[in-house]
Length: 293
Image 1 (cartoon, rainbow, N blue to C red):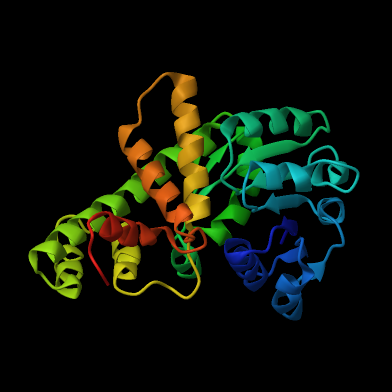
Image 2: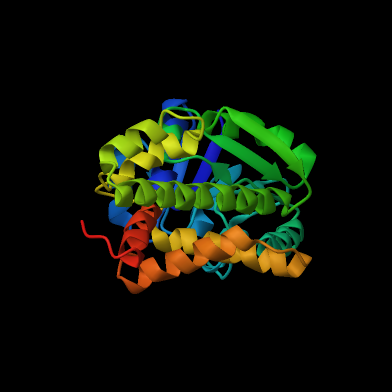
């Protein structure tokens, strides 16, 4: 069993920690807001006062935070993760951030004699709880093999992609598809509903048709009833789409559907829906179509 440090105990991070604890691993966790950690402490997680302490007390440290800025905030400085690393340790970042930030951070981690793996995930809190999460990994292949079994506790499908930053780029590519699938689905529901088809019937049939991907099956019902807690909110979705568009510009490629999705997410933010699940684009499209309800 590994000694694991974990920084970032939000919706996904907390559930990852539960899986690690249930598998018998020792976990020392840190979160900016300590109250979020209380249920995990009750389950046996040790509390770290700083990211540095979480890293220093562990062989493997995992981060799962909101964005590039949040990662750098917990990684750098006198009390950051890097300050707690020593030679041979493995730092696994499971956030979704800029690939260029990943590559730069990997260089700084290497200067400590340690290894950074970018290991973003594909899935939601539901797939995580069900043990169906997919993890893609970039970085040093020998470090990957050393900690693969730890990641397999979090999600059973763990795939090595290549050098540092590659997994992060692939995650952005996946999120383009997930977000634009929901946009397309919402457009279809609005079209059918505008013609007179009851929304519930349109959703039921579409989710049992050839278009029904796993992503649509678990998020499509939100068109009928939004969740009490966003699984992936508008603000986070816009962050990922923006990262994808920035990477596209860097590589000189066009991402037209991502651009449209970005516009709709921006419209949702202007409506004050930034903390709603991004399936709220359905409401944006209804508003644009002068439809009520």
